[in-house]
Amino acid sequence: MKPKINIDSIPMHTEYSDAQLLEIFHAGKTRDKERVFGIIVKRYSRSLYSYLRHILISHDDTDDVLQETFIKAWGNLGTVKDGAALKNWLYRIASNIAINHLRQKASAASVSIDDYDVADELDTREEMEKMDLMSRLTSEAIRHLPKKQQMVFTMKHFEGLKYSQISEILDTSEGALKASYHIAVEKIKSYVEEKIKE
Image (tube, rainbow, N blue to C red):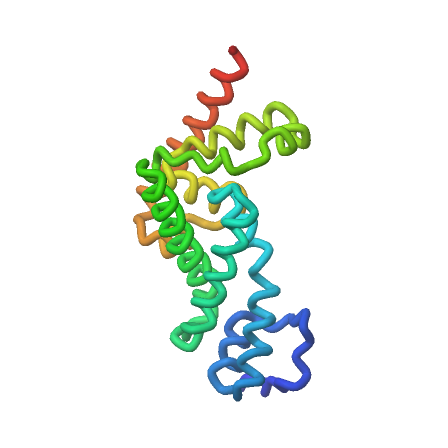
């Protein structure tokens, strides 16, 4: 028998699992739902920000997409029944919103999403001063990848997600994701090697 969770005793830095939080959310009143959602936002905002920043580059764009992600999540959290799926569900929302955001910007600029270079929005001088040569070249290489490869590489390399999780988020087979990740790694290596030779 599961121990009863005392909603009033939930600290903001809770040790409750995602499954327990969803249980409270589904059973709770509005005040309880808001508190649980606040905990979820605290738990996932940093990792989602990091993931989105690698894709969107711009802090302002990342903030906008992150906010939109949590707004959409709040409106649909009641549909999530499996606590183990919560993280993947949040990443899927963030990925879809990021892709739509990039499509809109690319459309406004009349270029293909894969040709759209968001790097121009960075204050590159300031950023480059902070990074050493290899780090800078790797970041550039990642930005030159097609958007789907960027997402796969970022989720696997920076966020440490498993292929099974990425598969659920991007609705792509694990085999295709492994191939995509391998191709991304090879492209990044080639890009860095070419730039070093110049």
